[in-house]
Length: 493
Picture: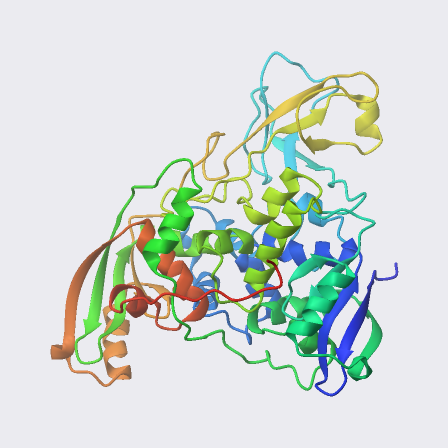
């Protein structure tokens, strides 16, 4: 099968060797916006270890190195390293889909059709010894139907769009083009050149990487002098958005506030005003590892649109504006991008930043004809199939428990104690490792000071923010006063 490609038309400034903007159909915009639905753990895995995203990559490496005995289930390691996207059915309809995560399969009991309606039918996302209420084992694998990509995946088809070098996406019109050229100080059209290019999986992967690290990703991908993101670390040292502003931005949009708190024991170098490490229970790693399941769009939302990650904020802002211009397919699709949920049961009781999980309303076609033709599970309301047979609703089992369908639960087994370094490297506690940190920084024992802090949602948001852009997260959050971040200008009025 020939690999699919997307066609783009670029406008290039010949003298500056810079892409000013691209023109495309909805297929390219759909791919760009799909970045917002990707869990950051997936992004870290795709862009590779050489391009580190602050300390978030360190969290990822901590999970890789963690012995599974510290997890409630052996399968949880892969759920952090290969987190599912709540929009996976939609993204399967993308012209180019770079997410290599295995699609979710569901396991039911093997029954003859039609199914009985006298008891609830259970489904599991993992093959196991769990049993349905009818007594049979849940080991019959069934896929879920892909989303409808007709007339676009996220934005409406048959429209053309302008994508600027810093990934602002706008409906294509001459007025916007002239405004952009005016902003760039271009009055002579002879310096401009048109170029047609095609994008496959390799180019989209490069674009994802550059969208996180660069302010001009189109130029970096299509007119590269060298791949500046190889071996690069996202450590921008930018002015921080005030943590109270972030907490307010997040909680204003949530229906209920999160009042949980967590106790953290810090060991601080007095002379350097630096946290060497924190001694914590299982709750803190539970929270950090859960970050890897957060979609990029949710992170942007939590941080008030100021992540300091390349052009990610521009993509998010573009969805807001295109939604206002009736370019997004529906409110449901708009929410998938601006308020993406966690995939079912990836939420965590110990998470101080409560991002909601996608409510699954799984139904199965209770029809031997549909099953025989390959039509299995759908995500939607019960109703009738085309043969007039009723669909039956399934109850999805929470994999953190044996036979529970409610949300909640923990990933880490306990009780256990861990050390977390300033760059968020998580390890089981070892006093020898703690003393090695003192030797690493050439510090005497007398320089070490113990501090106890209580953290809630405000501090958790600050840790999330700092983990994207810093290599000294705990020091930045607990010892340094954050500064406010200025807003970036855009073509949107």
